Image (cartoon, rainbow, N blue to C red; front, side, top):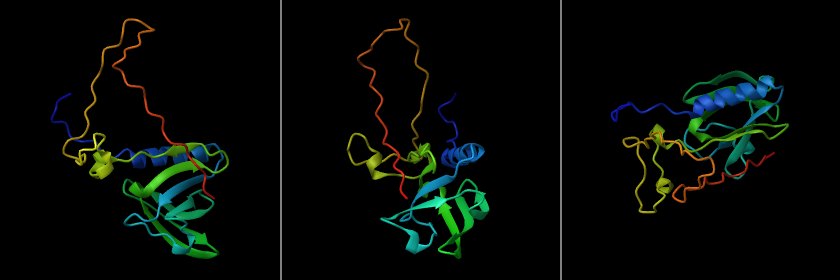
Amino acid sequence: MSDDSTPMTSHRPYLLRALYEWIADNGMTPHVLVDATRSGVQVPVHAVKEGKIVLNIAERAVSRLEMDNELIRFSARFGGVSHAVSVPVGAVLAIYARETGQGMALPDDIAAGETHADADPGGAGTSASAESPVQLSAVPASGEDGDDDPSTPTPRRSGHLRIVK
């Protein structure tokens, strides 16, 4: 692996499509939680609650569903009236099965070219950019099974997915 490797594309659309297929293949109803305040989100305003909207994207609930690397597009009925819906992939906060709540809250996609002021763990006021993505490298495994290295940080717990109806 060289240091001048080309940055990878966003993983978000691939995760969305894979989870959508997994949920549908298991006979469940896929829902997406969307940040309706993001630029490019086109949803019926009357259906937005506290800046968010939950969309049922099951095949039986929408028509002409398209999920590409940039947008999720479809037509759906809200209160009996058909509306065109367009959601940038970056505005999707989570995808889950309505019946079980199983799914995934999607992480921020900093390496895809977006910059976030809150991405700086040191609090120095700088933000990560697409020019300097985080590089991962292999770490040699310890020879002992019970080796507790105090320099190894414990993983942070992620948030819990809450179903909004």
